[in-house]
Amino acid sequence: MMLCETQPRTVIPDAIPITINSPVTLEKPSNEPDFFEKFIVEPGTRVKLNEIDPSYKGKYESEAQALPAVSALLQTIDTLHYVMHAEKKNSLLIVLQGMDAGGKDGVVRRIVTGVNPAGCRVIGFKQPTAEELKHDFLWRVHQHVPGKGEVVIFNRSHYEDVLVVRVHQLAPAHVYSKRYDTINNFEQLLMQENDTMVLKFLLHISKEEQLMRFKHRLEDPTRRWKVSESDYKEREYWDDYIKAFEDMLHRTSTRHAPWFVIPSNHKWFRDLAVSQIIMRTLEDLNMKIPAPAVDIARIRNRYHAAELKAKAS
Ligand code: AMP
Ligand code: MG
Image (cartoon, rainbow, N blue to C red; front, side, top):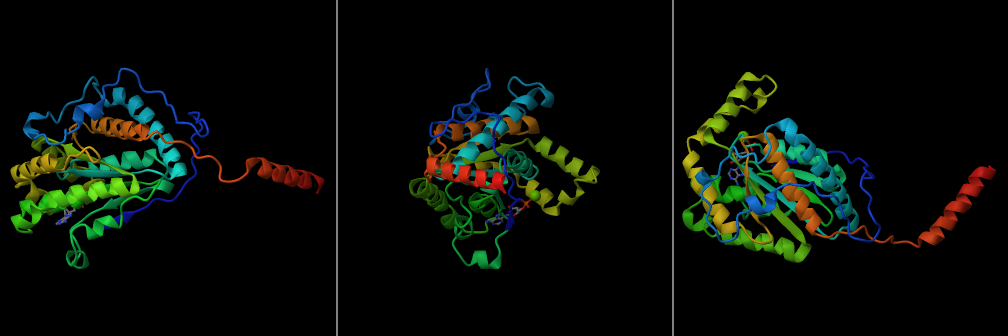
């Protein structure tokens, strides 16, 4: 498992006015389709991934066209995250899953550059260590969920325990098949006990697009470090992964922890859709900047006294 935390920086979002102690109202980009509604896996439904076009790009023709919308969304997410961090009432867990080269790292980079790292952590889940394997599959996950006021991004997650584990039969069917309900209960606990909203994104690419990305990794010296033998091995199991994804979506998309299938052949469209869904979720939390915990009038008097003293000296 890998933990990556960037250094705190101070960002006071002064571009968008925040009214003290009242809900934050932000301008929505106009004429924007609601990707939350478009890409959500309605609880209980069964999705066929081969019926979802991974090259979908809505009304956008190019990255250049989508970029202003992505920038505006990221700025709004930063503002809302600032309020979340100040209010310390809610938290957000973002789960990223997808095939190798599906764009999980890319989404992480996009979102993390968009928010204040002081209230954001990224956790990557790799093959479990010997110690982790001695415990239940949620043991290594639970300790990293967000605290109040925090956003945490899981790059892979507890869902590997019903994906790679199922595809490679690392556990018997009677063990992993019970995990869907266990996961639902776990995510419900996060909401019930800690007001943690969970958003889960399946980054959906085509098999051709994956091969193209593998090729870029081989050709581009700055990307060669990503090349891995196992990517090619996992590709052989493509159809098994699709089946495992479809069951995962069917069994674990819930109201408080929905799955979204994001068309991801176009990286810029993927970033647009994911950031719009995060923005809308944060907005729906109706967060407020909390009232000051101290008597501001009294502190102001102290400030004036200090100011006078500084002038006199
Ligand atoms: P990467 O994300 O490319 O760095 O690869 C991480 C690898 O760890 C992937 O091949 C995952 O399938 C694997 N992995 C993550 N979680 C688990 C798990 N619970 N059991 C087995 N393999 C896992
Ligand atoms: Mg990989």
